Image (cartoon, rainbow, N blue to C red; front, side, top):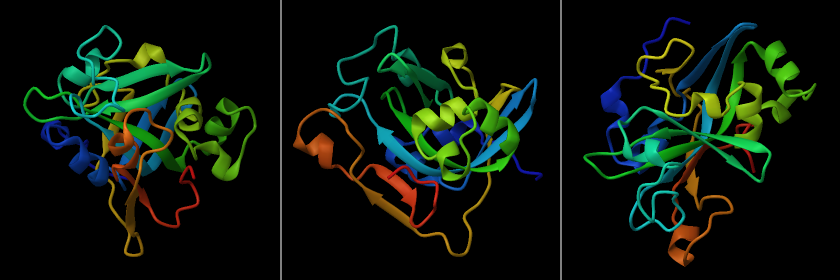
Length: 197
């Protein structure tokens, strides 16, 4: 597939817009074992101040620094003492923000993903943020990587298919007030077998 890398200005917009527009783009991961590629089918947007569900809500820390930095960088964090979460910094001006990539449709390197996932197959490969991070060998060593210039992890443009329908709803298991829990900032391709819920 001959597709263009997603440029910096694509990420330098409101996180809600970017989260929706990322559907259909392709995540590419080059590993010593081979190339992995998946089509993004589910995302969640997080802003900064004004979004209690966001890691950036209380301001800049060492952990959330990529959310405040240049758009198009990776933000990877560890939760529950066992899972990595893959996010992409996205924001306009100096307002922090990021997009959690929740699910992918595997396209290339599926045999490698199966090994990375300990033998899991089918939709179990990448139908959740922790699963896709494991399948794509994404961990803390990739935190703050620049997707616009890195040779081993980046996004390409991809596209939506004729039968793709974009749905939106509340984010999954977020903290914060009722507004944070009910904002329709999760986006997915309706009916895709790889969405997380």
